[in-house]
Image (cartoon, rainbow, N blue to C red; front, side, top):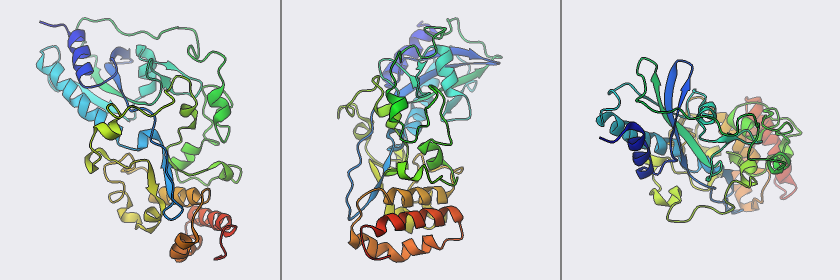
Length: 333
């Protein structure tokens, strides 16, 4: 009979997962692995149909893909007789400290961008695994340990690429994200965006990857066609496929009540904690930093004016800023 670790590693490899590690944390023990999705596909914008950029992790719901793989892995471990049925709890994009688990187990190390670097893949991956309570002791095995103990950023050395590339200076202190400057922090929440941040917004709709794009531990190229999950998995609603960008007009036209379960159904943006006005604010700001045709603006002018008169001060401020930016390009305002 194969031992627990042998089955765990063999099945994980079949599922296309990073070699898993085992860890203990407080009153739990668990398995942690990762699914590598690689660099995202670049935005291809069209002034006649302006789009907002998506981070690599948001172009398809890799969390959903990983959860499905973890379900298969857990069933295999249970059927092997090494684990009791129903004892494990799958986690992925959860309230659990997944980065802490990855560091504790030795799956990866911390980078100056605060993300987990997993050799030889880098950072373009999603973390997840299975948790067990101490009442279900693990089969005989050794727990993972953090590599290079004592070094804060063992793979970074003197590199400052991510610190210097962050458009708003959110990584002034290595390893610490200043959320008052982080574009992704604003893109995720309905906070007022400070004036000093607005010029840095760019075409961002959701998912800022800049610190990862410059990290030397990440491949400079998108994944090969035969391994890129965007192509390997048939783009479909099931996997929450959004592609390389979001049509901003569609977001602005959609009613609040149907936005989540319409355009973003099953995607990483199909989540109850994100207010629809956050996404609409993002769409407005993404419009302000790219070429937009006068034809498109004339078609959407009444809608833009509606947002500029919105009772929501955050939407109103975003619309006013965007209309001022667009006014330099056309004479409709």
